Amino acid sequence: NAGVMQNPRHLVRRRGQEARLRCSPMKGHSHVYWYRQLPEEGLKFMVYLQKENIIDESGMPKERFSAEFPKEGPSILRIQQVVRGDSAAYFCASSPWGGPEAFFGQGTRLTVV
Amino acid sequence: QQQVKQSPQSLIVQKGGISIINCAYENTAFDYFPWYQQFPGKGPALLIAIRPDVSEKKEGRFTISFNKSAKQFSLHIMDSQPGDSATYFCAASKETSGSRLTFGEGTQLTVNP
Image (cartoon, rainbow over all chains, first blue to last red):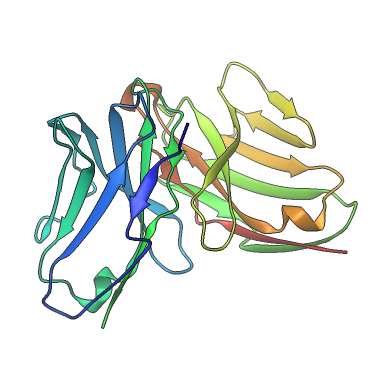
């Protein structure tokens, strides 16, 4: 049973480009969470999604960031017009029934140059 | 109201010693308190978790102590080993919010051989 799969593991983008981060939850998990970890800091909640629904996006920046979890396929975190301050590790977590116990992927490390 | 404060920021312990990491929270609605272990380049992995109906939970060498009145909880690692060297994060959530976790800032633990 594969764990939470994130790709790419590393992503380099120039300022102004778009970044797309993908997350495939564990088999049987229909709840997905995205977190951001800035260097030397803890993880900050961004968004909570179920299939085709955004449940809680209170941690998402108001502009340039969006997330989706379609009926088929992985969850996508999209960052438009990236800036240097977006450089961070982005982690996806999944849970089977929306309970508190979540399993994290290995993250995507985004570097904006 | 949503913060979780963690200390110390870094900790160095000799092999065989006890590692103690402390966390304090403000939001009395929190009712789930996990600890995560993170190795460099990896995602956080759930280590142990406690709910406020008990004051202590032990799993192997890892123990959580919980003080509801003081709104504090701590992780004790007994007989610390070099392989325990990692960053440890405490977190808190409301079970009704799924895995929307509020993380502490992290503690970098180094266990010297």
